[in-house]
Image (cartoon, rainbow, N blue to C red; front, side):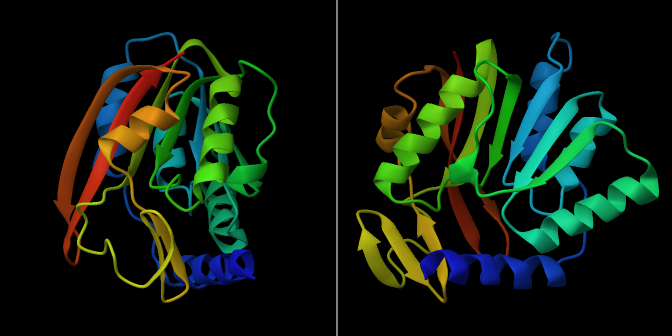
Length: 208
């Protein structure tokens, strides 16, 4: 039931949200990888594809995944209208990704990995390790336990709450470090920014 509620939440969200330019996280990442010989990029939880389009326009072959059909349809429409050739959009649950081993140079997960219980989160991180190439890079940004929304709603498990049919699993540095146990962590830090309120995050860069 919770899966269907989440799908409906994101369906409604992407039907209302207009496409925006790529976010600062994507731009910072490109500044780190632009001089490398990376070619393939997985945009995990791509939404309506703003960041996917940004990376494709920078020359990457992008696989864009989201379980929101409305988000993927918006991306497909943009691909057709602008004749973008380097994006493969896929409507799929992140939990069910099943690419071949060592397939992607870059995995980009902007606010897409903080929606699952602990067991599922571990399984997803293990899959990401499997499909990342040797010496590839993974970039992750998740909600932090210092976020203003932390503790609001019904508690599902440790650091995980559901509020208005929207699930959030809040990370701290230790939890991110634990989930990246199979990776070599290159950078791990706390960040914050202002949306309609101050939001706090944990960001990580790791390699295989």
